[in-house]
Image (cartoon, rainbow, N blue to C red; front, side, top):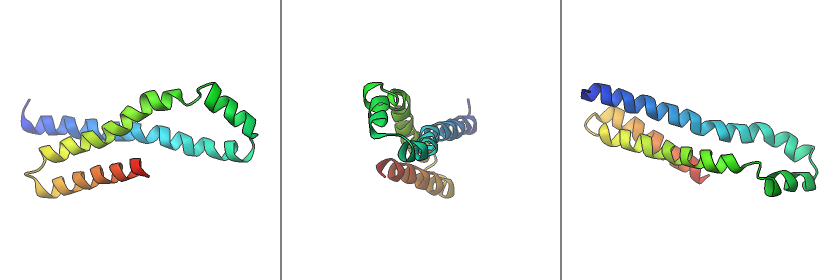
Length: 102
């Protein structure tokens, strides 16, 4: 595989991982209004704490969030000689890192 094909592979992989990483976060946003406005606190505690409703968010979501930082970081390192592309990918890496911190 030549370098252009390798970079294309990493670019597509990075975009897919980033999109998959945003899915669980968006699901939390969509489900938050009914949970905060209609559910009793006891029901909230029962579903989230005792029945592990968010277990897969940790098992699948956490590695995806980390991969959404590592993949563009590696892509930025691979694009270090192409300055305009490097800065855009580095900005994406930093923004994903800040999003995880928030």
